Length: 337
Image (cartoon, rainbow, N blue to C red; front, top):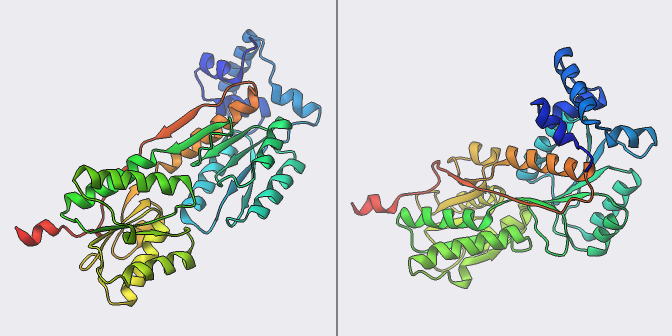
């Protein structure tokens, strides 16, 4: 079997990013490290496929990234992290935001193929599998980010959404809340899995989540407003709300404020993502943190591995979320103690 960039990195005791910089003659690498890497390449008789492809005009050192909405702070922060790791490995990035539109998704995939990108990171829910199969037929590696579609044999990098939803439910229960609601992005698998985990936490305590307290919303400001108003105008309001993205959570808090409903005095709120919105919200938003930097690092490195070894079978990487406690959840047990 031919040696790969990973074999070189392991034997030289450096990162694949460093080997990539040596191969592509980019970045700031010390002469000592450069010579060490080149010596290992000679010893292993490693012929960088990227160099050979560049000489034939086939490699562009560019990756595409497809997100559903760059206005969503989670995807904005993901895009920044992906670009940072891509640059470290000598790659440029083309970012495409589909705005949840099927036609735009198709157009961007066609654009990225015309641009001859070396690979694509996809964070949109696939609406047209034929477009993705076209990527396969053209041998363009792609990786699913925060989306796992069984019909697409690719690498997957995601967060354990069921675990995240469970953590949110358990936290609200531990704070004495029993009448709970959720605003979930049910059009995305991640939203449905977070709902599943949330319901499991309640079920463990013998509590059933009633259908009026399950509100569907796309993670966009206008849609989140409508969902928030629907929940806030229920005859019997919940004491705690789990929003499956920070954007939805912050919009809910703002809509509650307009109706003179206090957070957390009247309704407690917990979000999901741990974006900058959670940190600057007033009050600070308790949320389930996604390891954005780690997700981006794994995504870029796995995609580059697919570019280097296109015959490699897809792997599924799932990272654990964590609770970040701020001030948006009231402890109901305090008022009875």
